[in-house]
Amino acid sequence: MASSESSGVSLNTRILNVNTTKFGLFQNPQILETLELPRDLSPNDPLLLAARHLKTSSIPVGFPTETVYGLGADATRSDAVRGIYKAKGRPSDNPLIIHICDLTMLRDYLVPANTKHSTSDPDPIPEIYKPLIKEFWPGPLTILLPNPTPSKLAPEVTAGLSTFGARMPSSPLALSLIALAGVPLAAPSANASTKPSPTTAAHVLHDLSGRIELILDGGPCQVGVESTVVDGLCSPPVVLRPGGVSIERIRQCVGWEETVKGYKDQSEIGANAPRAPGMKYKHYSPKAKVVLYEAASKRDTRTGRITNSGVPLEAWRLLAAKDNKLSYLGLESASWPVKIGIVSTKHWVKWAGFHGAKWSTAERPSQAATATLDTDEAHYSDDEWDSVIVNHGTEEDPQYEPESFSPSWTRSTRSAHLKVLDLQPPTSTTTTTPTPPLPSDLVVTTGELWQGDRDSGYGSGSEDFQDDFLSDSRTRHVADMYEIALGAETGDIAHGLFSALRELDARGVDVIYVEGIEDEGDRNGDGDVAAAVMNRLRKAASVIEK
Image 1 (tube, rainbow, N blue to C red):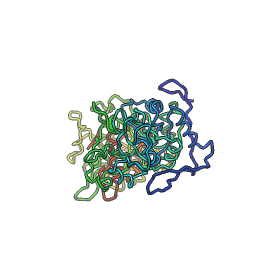
Image 2 (image 1 turned 60 degrees about the vertical axis):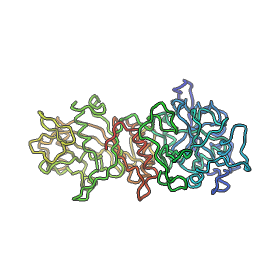
Image 3 (image 1 turned 90 degrees about the vertical axis):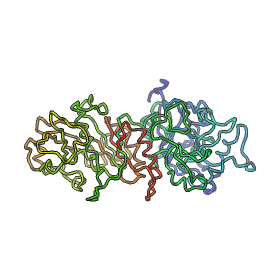
């Protein structure tokens, strides 16, 4: 039993597992006119229970779509829609997307109240959208449509706008739930306002326990980022929010060749009402400070090696903040050791290079446990310890800037030794119990960052070196490290992004360093969700490094 934060009313939030294969099917999948429901559902089927709840209650229901979990309510009843805002703890000045099960339902809400669309009537769906519907529905695309007067939708859905957003999800569970409810479902992401979007039922429970009564568990979401939102009622057409369908693919459709980007990568706070969900406030943000490193394809012209394989400067900044030599993300007043999260994608090596800053040949130590940043040995080393040398300059001239990593170092320059100790092999699937539980394909590698004296005469062997290092009274525990590698595929990155941010937040990290990706389409077709991934990350970021 959990207590509702907003009203003090005690609500019992239940997760209902949906294991049935008895979902609705389209009469004709090519035209999406009518979704037919199975006739033999059990009276206690979770879908039926949730549908009855949606018809009779003002408390929304959490349910999965292919993008993220939604928080659904009857889009025709004001009390039900207000229940969404109440549960999320969000103001009602941001429009909501309605989710429909078929085109027959959509047409009914494009004609005025007290009117039902007939097949003999002109089609109220604007012609501009028909190529998109044919190509991308059901799927992660939301279209802006004219809201008739008077409207059948609750006014809270549109937040005073003359348009509303609609989409047809591809999730059979979501389609069946909408059809059983008999009305469109207004459904933003099922997270507490400003928190990362939920991609599992456990995420929804973590954020909304005590605020709602039912969550349908259909497993992890496939896409991992919200739908693309487009406006074809203006010229040229506009992408208002990037999502599961890229602008490049949209431009391939008839009438959409000149589509332009109409969104910003920061929260659009101002006097004007937002045209689409996700535009106005700082959404998708964890509690921890997020430092986003924009993608940059850097390759050494002499060696051909990638040189953007980590952010060793951040280890430098940590030490500077710890020594009160630099004001950085509030870490100068933190309790040490701090907790550091790392989310890597395509190029970063293990620990994002914290353990492998570049040094000059003259400064390179001889210890066997030391590895350089740009070698396969550093990435795949079996040694328990890796190391980084961080140049502090001199007492008279302390250096905490990027130029400190120059090849002009000399042996007289004072340095410190940093070590990362692996506490858990990266191939392990066991983790410290998080809140909420991890998806099965997300692995957290844990470690500790230690600082010592480079010139203390430690043993030259790997075991002797680490024993001497740890036993030195001057050795200091700088940070606990948590690393999540999402992989190089854009789909995997999108699928795991919100879960990674939530997991690191649950572990109480102070800062999360994230490796960005290219947000334009490429020859591999990664553009579908890449722009959406970077849009969400830029909104979440406290600092963006280019």
